[in-house]
Structure formats: C-alpha cells, structure tokens
Amino acid sequence: PRGVESLREVERFDFVHKNTRRVGPKESGCCENLRRPSPPHASVPMQSIDVIDSHTGGEPTRLIVSGGPDLGRGPLHERVIRFREEFDHVRRAVTLEPRGSDVLVGGLLCEPHDVSCDVGVIFFNNVDYLGMCGHGAIGLISSLEYQGKIGPGVHAIDTPVGKVTAELAPSGLVSVANVKSFRHAAAVTVDVPGLGSFTGDVAYGGNWFFLVTSLPEGLELPKLRVHDHARWTDMGVRLRAALAANGITGDSGAYIDHVEFFGPPEDPAHDSRNFVLCPGGAFDRSPCGTGTSAKLACLAADGKLAPGALWAQESIIGSVFSCSYQEGSEPGTILPTIAGTAFVSATASLVIDPRDPFRHGFAAAGTGATE
Ligand code: PYC
Image 1 (cartoon, protein in one colour):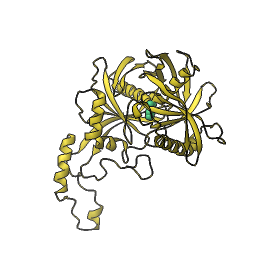
Image 2: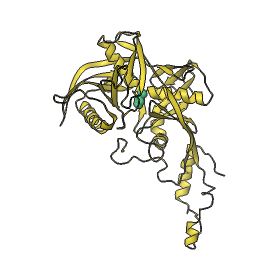
Image 3: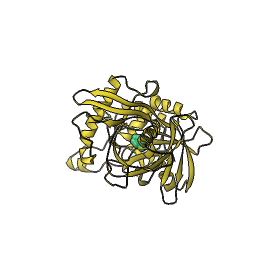
Image 4: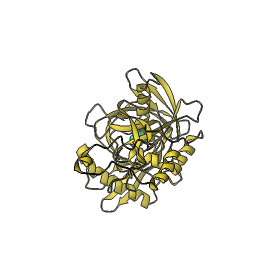
C-alpha cells in the first residue's frame, strides 16, 4: 500500500529514486503497452496533504488541514519565515499548477502561539505569503464548521500579523474583526511610463495596498466589469512597478503588493465596486477583506464614513462584503469588521509523487507566478 510519509521522508526518497532504475510494466508488444499499468508503483511512498477548498464571494481558499509542514510552536511571524525558507515547495505544490492556479490562496492551519486564540493560520499564494487574508479567514471558519470542529460563536485566530476574531452566525455569515488598519500616506502621485499620472493612498489592512483615487487625464472613472479584467490587471501591474521604482512603500519600506481600483457599484444598494490586483498577478474575485479594511481606513481618515456606519463593498464579480469599523486606540487607526459568506467546494488529499517532475508545481510563463 502507498505510505503517507513526512516531507523529510519524501526528500530522502528523492535521492534514492534518482539513483534507482524505475521498474515499469513489461514492454513486449502493442497490447501490452495499452494495458493499464499495475497499481502505480505500489512501493513508492507518496506524500499526502489533506485540504478543504472553499470560496468566499468567488475567491478560492485551500486550507491545509493535515500533512502540512510542522513549523514548530513559535510566534506565527517567525513560523512564516521558516515556511518560506524550508518548506516553500509545499506552498508551490498546493497553489501552483497542476493542482492549483494563480487565483488560489492557501492557508496552513496550525496551533496558535497566542494562547487566547483557538487556531493559527498562515496564508500564502502563488508567489509568497500573506500577512492576513480576509476572504481566507472567512473560508477558514466555514471549513472548520464544515468539519464539525466549530459552531456559531466567536473564534479567535492567530496570524503572522496579529490576532483576529471571527464570529460565525447561524446563517453562515462570518464577521471578521481584522487587525488594526490605517492610512499611511494620502494623495500620492506616481507617473506610470506609457500610461500617465495616477494618484492614490497607501494604506494597510493586514497587507499593503495602493488605492487609486484618480486616473491619468483622459481615462474616465472606470466602470469595473469583469470582462475588462486584463486591462485593469495590466494597469495595476504597471502601476505597482512604478511605485516600487519610485521608492513608494508602506511602513519601513514595505513593498506594496496589492493595487485597488474603485468605481460605482452595479447595485445601487452598495457603496462601491472594486478591482483588486493581488501579489501574484491574479485579481481578487471577492471584495478583498484586507483591501476593504485599507479602504475603510482611508474613508475614516477623510471623514467620509463614521464609526459603526455600514459600507457595502462589491467585488469585480458582484460579490459583497458588508463592513464597518471602530476607532483604534492609536490615533489614525481603525479596527475594521468585514462580513461575508464562504462555501466549501471540495475536500481532497493532494498526492505528491516523488517521481513527478512537477510535484512541487510549476509557474506557467506569463503569469504573475513566473519564477
Ligand atoms: O481577502 O484579504 C483578502 C485577500 C487578500 C488577497 C486575496 N484576498
């Protein structure tokens, strides 16, 4: 039978395998070649990673519930460094093709370090790791509910950027009280070669965002339609490169890896529609929990939204997060709450065959994940 081995075990096997001749079915004739091979290499130890897939307003989350790397018991901001340095192949195996896609956000469920938390999670994507992920936190809660591990109530989650809480309502609605969010810089203008001058705010909502407030002259206020996603992606990628080239960053030189455009909502009951470019070049199908936290921080800083007032943020595909904020304890900071619903779409065991040359994923040329 296939064994389920630890990562270290698989790596050891890699070496053995590279130095061992593969024994396949006997090749004696055409009919022999067409025959289904006997149980695929029954003696080869496979690694298996159990995941739950969900989507929150169309944006997928793949939660590793077992078989993931053991990163120890330290603070989550330290564990994420270990993940990147020692186990990045797991991130790639889970999120990249052939098992994943550029759109997918992964999450590693782990023991919390903060003893006041119920669970810990480290989110990641096709190119790197995330501080927090709003849609992912909603997906995490719905996945744990699906497993029967939690029920309605408040659940505390440890993340690399701090503690968040999530209230699961009997209806399935999940309200995430996110980390402290704030506007770092207002009305920053940047010239994007070939496009012109953009103005926007730099804000933090668990990740760093550039929130576009005005487009170059001649480009009218966007009607954000999903079929125009290539245009907004191209603009966002070029704008993000121009920010970096001009030394425009978040706190302590933090790289701004998300760009947000805003336009009028399709549904007049909502306040705004957005397009969010994610770090790996995909766009968020959901309204983006951390991005909407950053948006609320800017609205609060401009006096355009009062504490406790509701803000309905529509995504580029029309899914909605219902949001509000309370003032933070430090001046200029807010504590946002993002509410949305996730649905479980699959439970699966990912199999990593040590003989598979693409077992740790590959980034197709031209995608944001190209390494
Ligand atoms: O919901 O915070 C979010 C998020 C970040 C990247 C993709 N989704």
